[in-house]
Structure formats: structure tokens, C-alpha cells
View 1 (cartoon, rainbow, N blue to C red):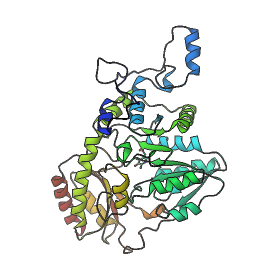
View 2 (tube, rainbow, N blue to C red):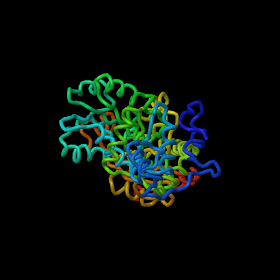
View 3 (cartoon, rainbow, N blue to C red):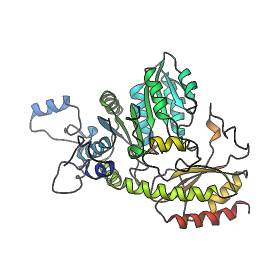
View 4 (cartoon, rainbow, N blue to C red):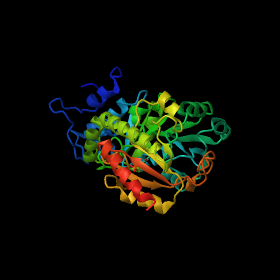
Length: 400
Ligand SMILES: *Cc1c(COP(=O)(O)O)cnc(C)c1O
């Protein structure tokens, strides 16, 4: 079966053929539930302990064939990658990557549109380890270049930004980081490797919450970091030191999700665009922040750099207040109210974007001051006409 060397195939084909495991007589790799791996003799045990790589039995904490198959498939999907480390959640992957890269006394530059737990980690855990986090505006590359000092070791990027969904010029930001001698990490959960080839666009470490698009069925939590040779080794050692391990059952679920990921992404992205256009035409809506929608912040960069979209976007009500926003969300029948996204079911969430911002004004200066009550939608695999009808009904509750 084809492995990581098969760079000639397109992503759709790699999704099917990669990470199929050692057995040729079944389609899917077996689920090996194993803490103990056995050796024929003491010499073999000693040899294996020193040889630290996927595909070699050692002990359950270094994973087994099911986890290796998933890591191999994720590596095959990221051009320029040497390996993938799996983590028990997306946040654990972010922590694992930052702890692998940073040392006390370092400065970490964090994009001001980062996922909120990334911000908390930078201001909490990392601060306790004497790393200083400084937030930058990713829409201002010149200001970003000026933010570096001789202690800046790493840059944490994310595009589109969490909640506010602006697409950033990642190739430009990553090039500046490289020129300044800093490592660039990117939270690539929205796009996945199918939508944005992070390493090819200049990033060193691509982080994903597999909980979202890869799992795709709202039934597992997992994260991954994919990187070139140098950083892969460091990530791997650090995650082993931290004792990170994912269960083989969850790895099998993630692999199953991965097989259909492109089909799901395309279907939910197409539905999201239809719904985004519909929302854009509603008088109650001031702004639709959807990378695939022409006129949305960073849409041109999305077209330039991305191969796929997805179902996650935000819209902002024209004026109103939090109570009106909640009435609208509570009136939805097909959208669940809950955290996470990227599942087969649609979700709606009230999001307050301005509360945590340090350098990026929210609402943006060009907007009306009272256009601030935002709702994030994760569009699933339902018929978009049914979702639009549901939203139409819910809008009637807005001013009731
Ligand atoms: C959900 C999410 C994560 C964290 O993933 P978990 O598996 O929930 O820990 C990281 N980054 C982004 C952008 C996310 O939306």
C-alpha cells in the first residue's frame, strides 16, 4: 500500500490510500489495544528502547499500529512534512508545540485573533515558565516586523482568525518570522492540510484540532502537530516527556473520519456559502464574516492561498443586544447550541469577540459602534434550504 513517499497523488487519493496499516487483507488497520509490547529476547528489548520511531513496538506510550497509521496519513497530506505527533486534544497539541519550542526568557508573539485557550495558555501556563507573550495585529505586517526583539523565539499564527474569521497573509508573516530567526507555528484547524498547505506556505509547525474536521462526527477529541524533520523530532520527544498518548480506538475513529473529510468539507463549505449569501441580504445582519464570501475580510487571500473552505463562519447583527441575539439562537430548531464545530450537525453559538482583544480593535473602526453581537455558525451536512428556513423562522424571534 502506498505510503508517505507517494507525493504524486492528489489529496483526494491520499485521503483514501494513506495510513492503511500493515495488513493487506483488510481495508482498515486493526485497533491494537496495547500497553505492553513483547520482545523475543532481552537483546531485542534493549535495541527497541533506543530506536524511537513510529512503526517500532516499544511500549504503549509511544503508540501502536493504529495511532501510527493515523499519524502517517496526516503526514502524507501535508506537503513538506516529515512526521506527525498526536495529542489527546487540540489544546494539548498547541501546548505540546509551544513547550517544545520555548524556553524561559523567550518572547512569544501571538496573533491577536488566536483561539481563546491559546491566549489563556500564553498568559497563564507560559507566563509561569517565564515566557513573555506579546499580541500582534496579523493584518499589519509592518507592525509585526517591528514587534520582534532578540528574545523572540516563536510566532503563533492562525488564519482565518478564531471567531472573527479574517484571512491573514500567512506567507508574508511566516517569511518575516523566518527572516528574524523565529519559529512559526500555525493553528490550521479551520482549513486542515487539505485547505491550506501550511508548511509549503512557510510555517514550521502545523497544528490541528482533529476534534473538528478530521473526526467530523462530534465523537472524539484529539490534536496533531505536523512538521519537517527538525521540529518533528523535538515535538516527538517533548510529547513523550509530557506523557501524551491517544487511544487506539479514537485513532481508528479519526482515521475513519479522515477518509470522508474532503467530501464533508466541500459539502459544508458549499452550504455555508449559500447561507452566508442569504444572511448578507438580510436587513437584520450588518456583517457576514465568511472567508469564502466575496467581500468578507481576507477573501482575496483565501482565494490566493487556500484550496478548500469549510462550514464555519460568523455573522454580526445590525445593532440589537445580547437578549435579542439569544432569542434568535434559542428559536433555532436544526442548529444545536454548543461548543466545537466541524461535525455533521449544524451548530450556533453567541460569540463575544472584543472582550479579549489587545491590539485589534473590535468592532473594527470602519463599522458602526453598535454592530457587535455576533453568532458563529458551523454548517453541517443538512440540506441548506432547511437550514435557511430554520434561520428565517428564528429571525422572526429577534425583535419579538
Ligand atoms: C477547538 C479548537 C481547538 C482546540 O481543540 P480541542 O480538541 O477542543 O482541544 C484549537 N484551535 C481551534 C481554532 C479550535 O477551534
